[in-house]
Image (tube, rainbow, N blue to C red; front, top):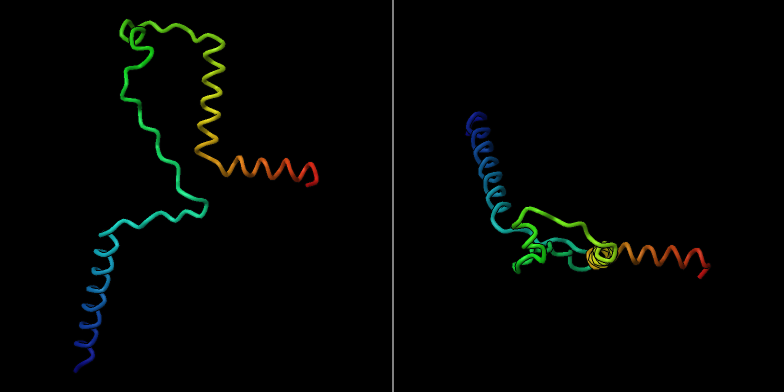
Length: 101
């Protein structure tokens, strides 16, 4: 076998191996690697009508009352705690370290 022929076979073999690796990489999605448990899921929009549907239809929006704003802040804070539990755990560890526990 001549040197030119051997080089050609090596090139063809390498190309086929790369093609096979590319096809297999595109085939099945790899599972996510989670060390701290499952990842948070995206919140889907509610399929029920909005509580502001009448105001949205008329094009007029009233301002939120202070109590509605407080409730919204609480809801967002609670949702953040559910989505990012590791932050809460780190916060607790820092508090414990400050207290000297």
